[in-house]
Amino acid sequence: DEDEDEEDQESNASRPAAGGIGGNGAHAPQREVTANGPQGQGYEALEEEWAEIEARTHEIRIKEAAEKGKIRAQDDIMSTPISYNEVQQWLLQLTIDQEVLDQFRNERVVDGGCSCFARSRAASDVPGLDRKLWRDKDLVLFLKATNFDFNEVTHFRMLRTAYMKLTRNKMCPSIGRHWEVLGFQHTDPRTDLNRSGGLLNVLHFFFFFSHHFDILKSAYLLAQDAEQNFPLACVSINITRMVVEYLLAGKLSKMCNSGDKGVLDTTCKVYAGGLYHFYSRWRNLKRTIRDTEVTFNEVRKLMEKRPAKLLEGLAKGIQEQKAKNDPGRFEFTELDFTGRAPQGASQPAAKSSAPAGSVPRRLLNYRDGTE
Image 1 (cartoon, rainbow, N blue to C red):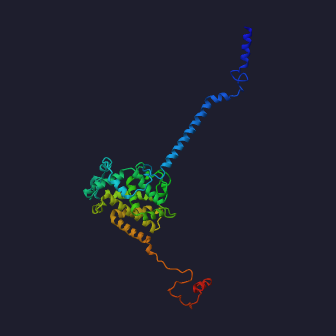
Image 2 (cartoon, rainbow, N blue to C red):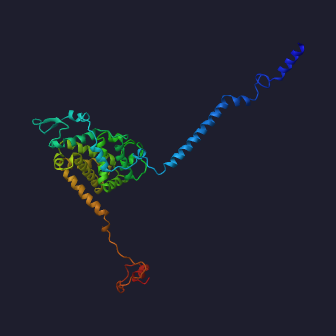
Image 3 (cartoon, one colour):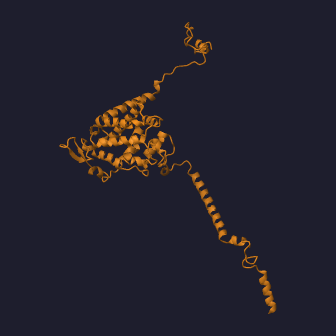
């Protein structure tokens, strides 16, 4: 028994202590513990995660290589320019929410100058407008009451198309300071658009953009001028407000009744005439931001009293723009920089006996044709 006890003691002495070599384990190496403990498991998990990322990246590369050159309509629809014909088709399919129009039906306005003959009516009842045009009038009011929304594809495409072609930028985020270049007061154009006019603001502006781009481009460049700058988008919104005001007052009823394309088309044309009048007065009279209200009053006066005059001014401006862009107005002359006239050409005139005092001496030989 004593021999067995001695063997057990020797066996226990040869084993390391629980804390490792050193007795209490305070300075014992932790290599084995680290390799098999929680930290080692973390390294293994990280390696597995990187392996998954590498495999996923490889799959994405294979997929992109297979879809190279293909157009994904769902992803690219927002960045695709939209035409006015597309917008018209969209308008034909638009459903007018009658509840939205209640705000105009419930609003009462008073017609007539003298209180004795004043008559109260709903704001939506346009004086003098043919009843067959009332549905088209309701469409105008519905567009005015509809907020511009970036999430609506047609809304964003109209504004984006105009912005990108005018500024020649390839990027157009929903929010950003780039909108200030177009004349908005904030980085989010919805703040200005939905304060007054809503979606009708964008439609009017897009109408001008689609039908009179060269004029709008000139107005945009003038709006960036160091001396004559003005906020183009804000001016546009104010003119749309005028159009709606005079439409509801019956000032445009005669023009709407005589037209063949409805109330919306008439408001677009009157708006275009108003915006052109503002631009032409601003340009021709060298006006600055101090003259904003004066110019608005000039547009307002014509729109109220003589709206057809605005359309005549626009038509004249279109003709002037066409003449300006007509290459036929330039005259080209054949110039001979070699001094060797082509065969059959008339011989140079004899040397003039007039004094050459008006010609610099260094150019005399060129004048006489000796060099």
